[in-house]
Length: 277
Image (cartoon, rainbow, N blue to C red):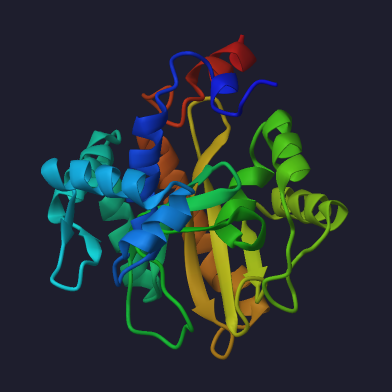
């Protein structure tokens, strides 16, 4: 029987994949990893985990402290910031987010859909009453975030179908949408409104609003979102006051992306072109 690795094709380099998986594991681990933790996360023996870490140390991406815990080094920022700098009109996109932050006075994020998750690319935070915060590079399940729902509501049907087939719809809070039928109905409502809301679906006490960012073919490739404490923002206020601000900024950013086929390098250029013909 063909193994999972061989089924990926002869160009798949398993050692490289494990090294990248090791780096990705640190995204949600701010206090470092022990070698045994890395070994378990990668599902490899300690000797293999040690060689992977040693290689990443030699390349400057990891370092080990006196307690033998491994941490990322500043070198990893060269990868993330190179990506952000490659976005078309990146300074103007950031300026649009800063303007929205100034008008609303709440955290503003820009994110994209990658698989089943949203990945946050840019974030303007503030001290607030929210029970959580996210950093650039952080991921959250798309089905229970306003950002993810805003992107999916305006994505091609094949993208939505594939997402729903794979989504877990596990309850994250009392109001989490936990069925494909309810989720699809939610996407239909979002299309009518032009924006998405999150009503304590991810965390109790936290609401959010998000507006889709479109590419030149009219498909959502990103979204901007504002998390808002439920104690200070009713759903009616969010829809009537905050949402129009988010939609305006998303529209401005969409305009900035019109010259690019695949502005966020999501690998969808060929599909967009085929759909437009």
